[in-house]
Image (cartoon, rainbow, N blue to C red):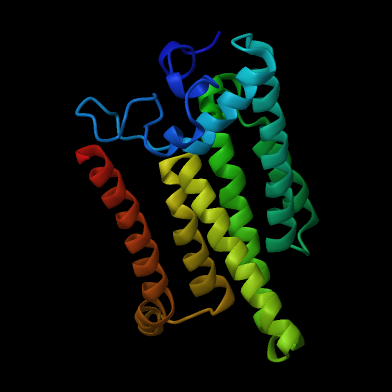
Length: 229
């Protein structure tokens, strides 16, 4: 059964609503500037519902099939993550994806159509983390000093930032992908001591976070200006 407010009565799911409207409405199809808005900003999740509607309208089968397919994709990415993080621990890299796939905590996210926000955010979260791990790997490798190596590093870093942004646009807690990348950099890649952590945060991470915060503030400023006009 499909949730009424999130899908059946959500105007953004219907093709008659301009696609750009998804950027200005919350998860339930209410304008973010409206006093009754839930303020949950998940345009990519709503877009996926819209694509399902184009396939089967409000018949639930395609919605559930999509959720299962996304869970399979998330499990595959988690398997890659486990293999990358524990390359020599065969039991861990085999058992971890199986546990991830079958753990009952994921039941609601997969079985409930609106839980797609969690599954989709997890996919992009893992994509961001894996991309950042590759970025760190390029830094360690010999190619990091060559021109091609520098381009490769920037590409992986860009992929990590894009994936983290897509995770946030799927569900708000996707922003924690940035924290996960920072934790990997500090504790796994750099193996920093506590006294060195502050300098890394201020010199390497703070400028990027400020730039992202500025970009998000500009989006909300544009929304407010359009609401006034």
